[in-house]
Length: 161
Image (cartoon, rainbow, N blue to C red; front, side, top):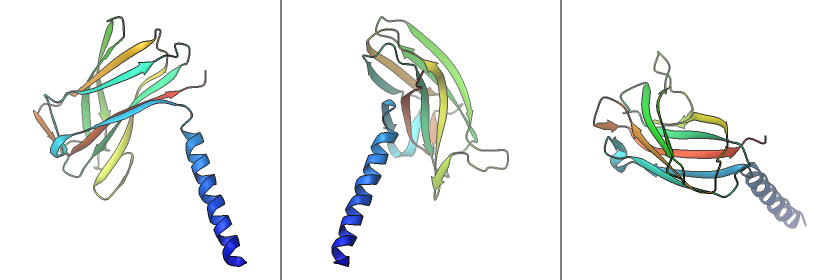
């Protein structure tokens, strides 16, 4: 009888964990990532994300995620970001993010030599029209080949306002 009870408790725990995990993602509108070939982000490799939007009333936060390794040579990164709306209007930004402090301690979370960091981009924005929005992201470092970058992602989450 204890063995059967243990199986029911395990099944309950698994169901509870899955329910909690799925409820945490209810606010995620879009998430995707691009893997860099050979863990190197070439200047010519522009990460492109196509985001389908049907809800034009919800406000959202847009952020990027980056995973870097121990061979990433800098403690910061510059990004050139272009966002194109369905009607052809675009905005461009040059962004700079610190990935590590002055002593070389990496921000974010990680295991081993890989570190992941969320990079906030825009907060409390809304997409004024339905259709596909395109985000293009290029690194803006002074090197053609940026080693130690595993992938770059985008995440759009409802703000609740």
